Image 1 (cartoon, helix red, strand yellow):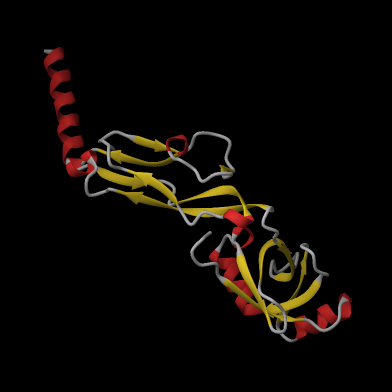
Image 2 (cartoon, rainbow, N blue to C red; image 1 turned 90 degrees about the horizontal axis):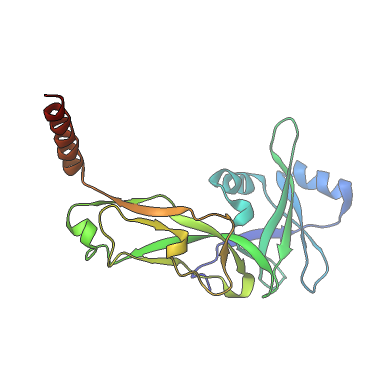
Length: 208
């Protein structure tokens, strides 16, 4: 299970329907609803400025949250929709879904690189370029991995690490259906320059 799931603090909303939603917006709150699981739908609301900040931070709809509402048990949720004003593009309503342990969800999982100190390519001055510091996976809600491990113990200069080179947690698979690059080890800039100069000299010698 992921180490720390961020809290999403909301309030229970009194009443439902358009009138209650308008009242919430007048109070600078964004109305929402929690559905799914084995419980009835729960009308909620969150401070407008809090939700807007989280939306601007990105990936709100692909983050697992621990929903905290006074008087309710904490529950794990994921956002299923955020409705926006068509003119101002500001949030006007949001939908959260309770997760069962067997629910499949798309989440971004961080990548951790091991043995950088002993990697042959890095010891020779190579540079590790991380293309994807995190990877979006389809995972089961009851078994969300904390991270993806990439072992660099035998990585050399010129090596490219693709998703197919990584052992993914059981039941998890990438959302992208191709063998994409996670990282690579490139030659140090000094070595690249000397190789280019050598190539130029060889071309000159050939011309002569």
